[in-house]
Length: 113
Image 1 (tube, rainbow, N blue to C red):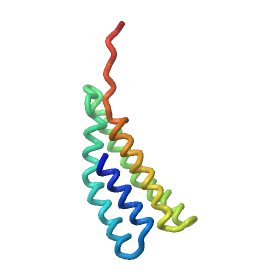
Image 2: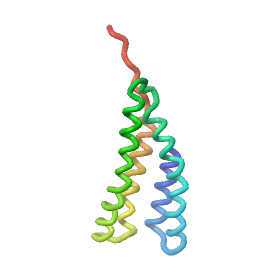
Image 3: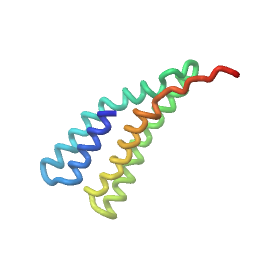
Image 4: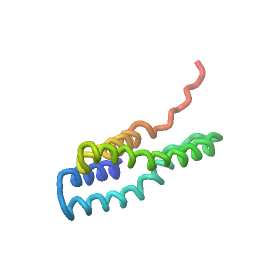
């Protein structure tokens, strides 16, 4: 979760600055992305037992979002400008932070009553 929050902070910096500060903050996001996927992948398949292989294949296919989100951001950039369009990845990282805190907790099976 801290990594997603740092990425959000870098995106806010990008949206509110100009020149080399904005550029380097965008570049720095890649550093934090490199840590996020393996961590999210591990959280996503934890405790799934026999369903681990199916879940891991679905997670790999979910990388497709990496192709759709830039299109959405590009369309928004055409409408409102490049810097405000960074709200799209801010929302994505906010979801990742939420997932790290709430969504990644494996549900424990209840004992039959």
